[in-house]
Image (cartoon, rainbow, N blue to C red):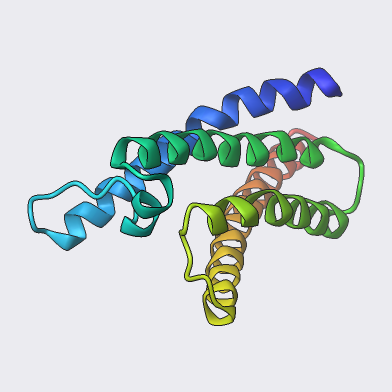
Length: 150
């Protein structure tokens, strides 16, 4: 089990970095002023230089992705779908909230934290529902083939 968690963390880490980079590109495209916004300006202030901020954000993006990757082993358990979902959501929330806070991906206020969790849970539910629907369709297709071959 430990080996599986480690392997998933190693797979998730570069995905976290890639997603972070894609978000920075998307933000830069939306701003549409010809500049690349790798990090939020407050992070540059926190770490002194832009390159320090980018480096720290890259490291934390790797950790963010690793947390999601490692937590994915929960889906391999024999638990109920409800228990797996709740435990996975809690682990991902606990692992990623401090990173999002430190990287200033949210306002440092009660409203900012609530907004972060609202967005986080909304995205989580959308991804979960799409995965659930896809798996359910595959199961229905397999059951249909089994019934046709009887």
